[in-house]
Image 1 (cartoon, rainbow, N blue to C red):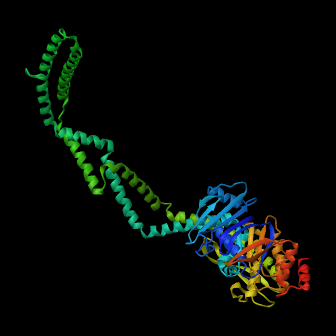
Image 2: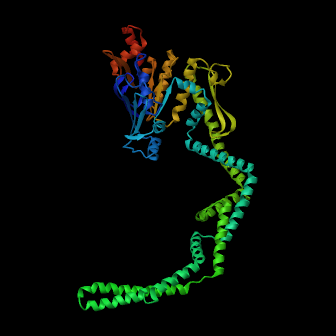
Image 3: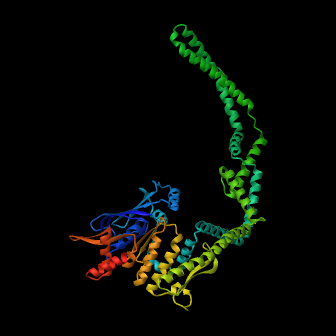
Length: 551
């Protein structure tokens, strides 16, 4: 339920801190006092579209915070959990800050959020019915939503939506497949040929790297042999070879060491050089003896490299990408074989349609049953609202399958005895439309999970004894367990039925006009009802009448 609404610097509101109670509450006040401003502000906190010009003159921003108690509201708690917002002990704070240029920021429990998230969580918190919603009732979409809300099969409807979309997705793929079946066959043949050629290559990237090393060695074998022979000659042949020169230096240093022991470290270095020189000679000789310039091996290596290059040029792929590309080809071959196999996509389409039809049929049966009971309820409410012989009927019209099922919903009504049932769209009288709208809302809202309902002058065009009936209906609605009904009204008969009565009024301070609100006590409430009943001057008779209405 809505516990508190804090509004700062909004239109003609300086600061308003308003607490709300469970049950049926009425908001009254003279025209222009700011009653609807409160609803507009709350709507912004619930994610409605913001506009520039709502910031009170002389301020940089308007700030609106709505506090809700989530006790018993499992849907709202589930939303917070799924969207990773903290849920502090059954309390929820929605905040909207709007700047002079029309830009705004949103917060959920103090955490920055998007306007879309405010709107999404708000759908689980408050339903607002205004004069404009009369017109929404004329739309078949709204009529279906009213029936489905009363039906209370949210999960089945969500499932139906998913099943329809999956069916249509597969149907689209099937249509595309049938149009392109020949090209798919050609693609499969080309891929299989490509995969066979690749298989013959017996290619691995590791082997490819080794092939390049081997090819470079075999192609330069003679140059390698000549170069190694030259190195061996320089290291180990002739009087000035590396080994002979190092031996002479080693002998001289050994003699000099006997003269000065400080040459010991230098002598060790020379001994190491001599040993390394001898090792170099052995390694060069060993390398030369093991060189194998096999012409057949060279030809085989070059032929395989050429085969790989030819394959890569043919299919426009780099050798280093061949392994990953080949996996993609094989996966595509498997997919095409499935599509072109015994159990092709048409089977999947048929299975998806069967699954959709099963759920759609169950929903249709439930709609038919519930349409009868809801039609009866709304008829009873219309009779209470002075449509003494009115009949209301919810008609299910078979239609093409859609995300919403296999039928469209149409509201039919006859407002007097003997009148033909006609679509509600043809009820043109404003007063009649208001009463029919209210009857539909009050009758159908009993199964709605949203705990707070706000009616913004939906009783327009209603008066007299009918107004008292409206008040009773709204009172019954507000007195349901854990339900909060807030009504903005100009009718004393409606306001008198409320449990909590708030008055909105203007306050002039100098050149500034502000809107304020207060919860009325018993005496103030009598005076407010009298004001709503009377003319310019409130008489004792009017006061007595007000007390009589209040009971």
